[in-house]
Length: 125
Length: 243
Image 1 (cartoon, chains in turn yellow, cyan):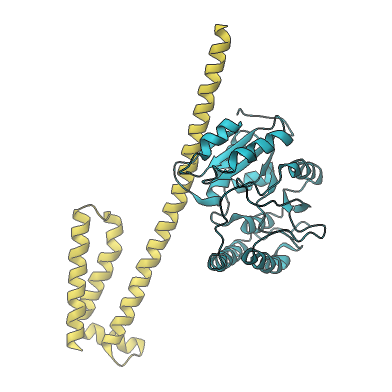
Image 2 (image 1 turned 135 degrees about the vertical axis):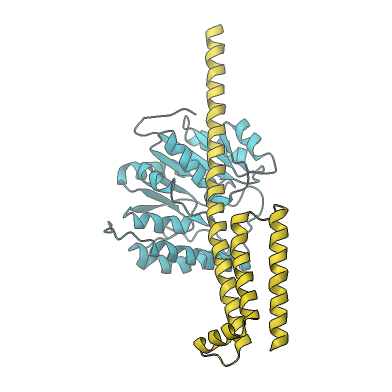
């Protein structure tokens, strides 16, 4: 059990370092790093606090505390993935609307230019 | 193309993606059977000469800055048509499968029936149409699924030969399915208590290129659209259905 908890602690520390480095290099925006940092810190705290983990396992009716931690890990990451799915969906919708808007504005500008050219040519004759 | 306020203003839109082998013929056919009617080809960021060939054939081209897929492409056309004040829009595919001779028929029904959407159907009047086996299975499946949802049967729910009026345009410009739009669009209209009619049309073989529909893609299509249909039902606004 202790070995598994150590592995989870190491994983959490690794994740925190990775996220912080990614934020520093501007690979992830700060607002999107919060979910990952929150998840990693929660895992680290639970894997280092035996009494908290024991209480959590008891509350969930699970005999083995590491199993409770793994279950929690799954739930936390599902929530993070859901949050990012929502963000990606919004981004895709915005991206499509923006691409359509750009195309329509470009089309209308070109039409206006063509109209102007025709009028200028007609006035010159 | 200029803004219009004519009550019977019609715009023909043709979504196209890498259709250089067919697009010029499609535009010429439309010009022959609908002279004087503006034609808008929406180029979904083709990598071939679709846009320039469409222009040479006499269409105006709305070029999307990147590939959006069929729904996003058609919706861009609907948005522009609405902004320019068009009252009717008829959409046909850029691969030459739809016969431009059927456009006047769709337009007449659209104007006279008061329906918000008219679908060109290849399966009316006893015709079985020519289609691939996977598509045929999908069509039969969605006929069954849509019958109780729409409150009436639809013979050709996957048809891309569709006319809409301004009421439908005002809905589609803000809410239009993006990936496989035809079937979900019917549910979107049903939510608004709008009506649709089908008219018999002919379906020709593709003028160029190959259909990308395979058995695996068909299964993906059915699952995706089925999910989209149910999501749209969940969004149902509770308004009374008109038939």
